[in-house]
Image 1 (cartoon, rainbow over the protein chains, first blue to last red):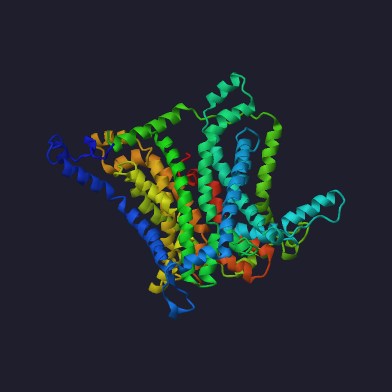
Image 2 (image 1 turned 45 degrees about the horizontal axis):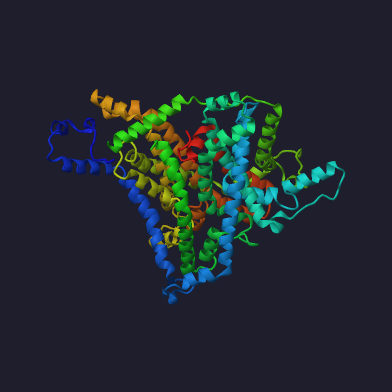
Amino acid sequence: MTTATPAASELTPEQRTTYQAPQGQAARDRREARRRRIPLLPALVFTIAATQLPFLATIVISFMDYRALRPDQRGFTGFDNYVQVFTNPAIRSAVLTTILLTATVVIVSLVLGTAIALLLDRKFIGRGAVRTMMIAPFLVVPVAAALLWKHGILNSGYGLLNGVLTWVWGIFGSDSPPQPAWLTDYPLLSIELSLIWQWTPFMMLILLAGLQSKPGDVVEAARMDGAGAWQIFRYITFPHLRRYLELGGLLGSIYIVQAFDSVFIITAGALGTANLPYTIYATFFQQQNYGLASAQGVVVVIGTIIIATFALRTVSSLFDEETGR
Amino acid sequence: MSTHTNSAVAATSFKGSGARKKRRTPEDGGHPAWGIAAWAVGLLFAAPVLFMLLTSFHSETDAATNPPSVLAPLTLDGYRSFFAGQPWPPLINSLTASVVSTLLVLVLAVPAAYALSIKPVEKWTDVLFFFLSTKFLPIVAGLLPLYLFANSIGVLDNITFLILLYTSMNLPIAVWMMRSFLAEVPVEMMEAAQLDGAGLITMLRSVVAPVALPGIAATSLICFIFSWNELLLARTLTSTVASTSPVFLTSFATSQGLFLAQVCAAAVVISLPVLAAGFAAQDKLVQGLSLGAVK
């Protein structure tokens, strides 16, 4: 398939009169191809300039000794920064934290999102109200959500979570309820909880849309044939939901790998919760070691590209399904 | 067969199958326990937001109790001290950055999406995937050169520079979304209208607009939300003049010591535009979040 032959109706009247003539066809095709590119160019040029050029600069700086506090020492140092990246235990732990954080949040949000979408796919009184309540966490500005979780919910003295524990224990007549110091004893869990709270609604929305596009007649037919609820879910609903699960997982991963706000606010990277975005930010701003920060950035991008290649293949297959090819 | 007619066929068959598979009505209620469970889960997820809203109207002493003083008297003190802390410049900066960058994104994305759907360029799928692949590039990896560049040409703490960066941040998403909407424009109807001598304006209004406008609305909503929420770029590249509300919120919480009611009031005010827009356009939100894959 090619874009070579434009439909006759798109040609101007002048062009149409000569449309049958074989000579000049190639030139016209080239003109048409050029004309079609024009609306695309501004966006393409802008995107390349704003995303690819800074990254090229990052690569160059990653091979330099470039520290804001020691301007006299600036110069190329080969792979020194990369050696530091791979030998520094703090960075290795940041890689692990990033993987753990992303995987936990994406998987738990997907599972909860699916379960809640299945609940909301039924008719019940106040369905719209419940849907609206479910969306609310996703619409709280991430910085505000992180502050709310840190100070309002997980605070060991007066946070909502420990407050509820006091209530519940009080109901059973106990005046010594457990009062965990969530932020210091379970720092990574604290971040995960706040992110799961924000991202479950996202997954739920995508999966609910998936459920609602499910052909009803197939389910009806299966029920006629005596299929049970579990069989319908296992053999009809789940296969249909698969592409929506993949879409949610992919988009969620893109955003949560880059999660900065919650780590920055809830723990400020302390107690082993520094993920890669936070670590790079700290190398850049607190240590002002620009060369090392750039090398970290390059390593992150290479890791992301490896994961993204698989992810993009997934999107490709979704995309082919959508365009019907 | 040209890509053009091919995509037209694809678009019609997609629409066609949508119309054939009639959308399923929600499953019948079944046991009322399911409805109760749904309400319980909804309330659980909304509880932190409701708690935030309630606490923002409490006094600081009532906000910091264990267990929480749900029935404490309401006051506007939290909001008063929030608005006494000069929140207007950052709020206005956020609004400017979000609205202007969203408009810029649309100006760039709509023609690009047109060139990827209605009259596609050669290898349009490759171009489309290039746009998506830029979203995999972590912002933090390009942050340092952007900082050094802004520093050298003197645009640190400049709202225009931030607007351009937000535009580049949201453009790939917008191109994807707009393409998936414009792919549903009935191209053969456009051609028929053209043959009948309809002008460009008439054609845009009667054939393209009905499909494109919901797409533009969904795209705008998502771009607005992402720009409004952004912290990392704003924190790195602005300081006093051009700082946005998320930056203000981080500094507010640290400089005031811990005042939960004030923090909650601030969080409510700054989340309000997103909450309002998102609640008002729930369906657009789903379309936008799935990059237009779910309609």
